[in-house]
Image (cartoon, rainbow, N blue to C red):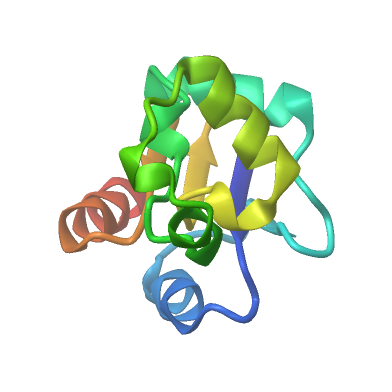
Length: 116
């Protein structure tokens, strides 16, 4: 899989995608209009090592539901990501067996270096 999963209304996602070199062969997947599939999420899980690594604690729903004080399992993280697109930390860049998750400076710089 060569794909970038992002949210078109997210300025950070758009800025990061613009900064990425050599992404001509990648599929750009807007996760609100075209939700991720179970198979895609399971592949991301295989590459990232856990569903928790793919989960966004910055999501408004995370705060609204009071999840900060809950103990979530891997199954919970998986189900929440599949339930609503905002629970996926984004962007997610997948290139074969390599994955970059989120928008931290370190992750963005690593993705740019990898794609250069």
